[in-house]
Structure formats: structure tokens, C-alpha cells
Image (cartoon, helix red, strand yellow):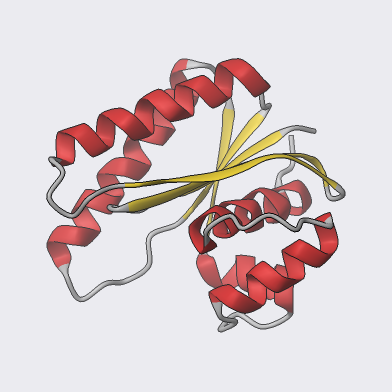
Length: 153
């Protein structure tokens, strides 16, 4: 089952496509300048997500859930990015899954408070990756990998 995993972020958004627990087809992230307009960032995330849907044809989109942040404005912007991705999934009649970060980390590393670096090391080992993708891209891979286990059609 092909899954598009997305780690949404205001300035760094990770994307990964997996075919199985052993096959990663794509891993990358978009990074934005702190001065870039919010609308520009939303548009680039939308366009890139659309490209991945058309190019890889996943059956499911898995999204990392928002975590409680002290900055309410950032949390609202992050929730809008999530909403954009959900709307895109619905417009394509795709299933989507929202996974909490602690569940993802526990599934990958065995503990819900694992660091991004621990998640990255484990996934590099599982998928035999040697690339230098960003931590956000590996977070997206973790989301997709976890969705393979938790998504029920």
C-alpha cells in the first residue's frame, strides 16, 4: 500500500512516500525563509503535495498531528496547513490519517519522547538510506511508516 507521509510545518515541511515497510520511494522537505509570506508557503506546500499525489498515486495520506505550542499564532497556522492537506485528500477521495507525534515516535523507536535524531537513525537503518535528507523529511518518513501499521481500510 502506497502512503504519502507529511510532517507539516510553518517553515519546514517534510514529505515521504513509502510502498512498504522496506521501500521508500521519496523523501524530501520544503524549507521557507522566515520572511516569506504565509500565502506563498501554503501555495508551495499545496503544489508540492499535488505533484506527489499525481506522480506517486498514494492510497492514503498520513499527517503528523499538531502538538501543543506556546505560540498560538504558530499553532493556528500549522492547523491551517493540516487543513489544506486534508482538503486536498478529500478532493481526491483519498483516505487520510492523523497521527500524534508520541505514537509515531513510540512506533519507530519504542518511546514516545524520542528525539528527531533517534527517529532518523532508526529509519535510516530500516530503509537502508544513506542520504542527507532533513530531520523534517525523516519525520514525514516516520509518519508514512507508522501509517502502514495503523491504517485500516
